[in-house]
Image (cartoon, chains in turn brown, green):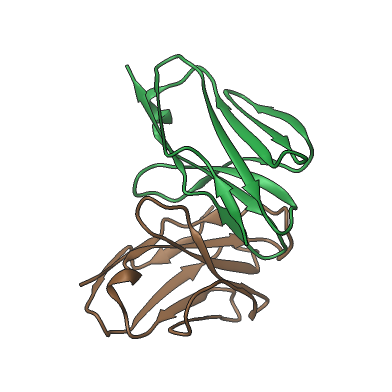
Length: 114
Length: 109
């Protein structure tokens, strides 16, 4: 069974550029969440999408946006990249939106901003 | 806000037992997760506690006290492959997990 897949696995961008990260959830999962993990820290919640609608947003600037497609895959977009955006971006899928449901994580996209 | 604390690092010998503590103060509480994360890899699920008490799963056990805002993960019969970061995460509402910074466990021969 395919797990959560993310692309690309690694990415190097220059300050001020834009980036799009992609995530395909586990088949049958309708909820996708995005997390940012800076080196040495735990993941920080960015967005949750469920049934193609934004259901939750963390404390991130408007430069961060996301969307979910009819097939439940998702994109995370970051505009006007800053050096501080360098991190591992994790996508997690769950079968439902509700609490108490295990979140399955993808391998992540390692973004380096130079 | 959410405040989740766990030790930064722990070192133990192969075959030994290690206990990783996690204390939390959150605006809501549905349950508490423990994840294992090897360097450069995705976090993988270890346990989920909703009610007070001890949940045992093979070499790993997790304990929760909701009144004290406290949990621990117990790793028994440590193996070299257990060297990883262990993340405590609180499910505080219906759409996100709030993570601690992680505890790096190093297992020595």
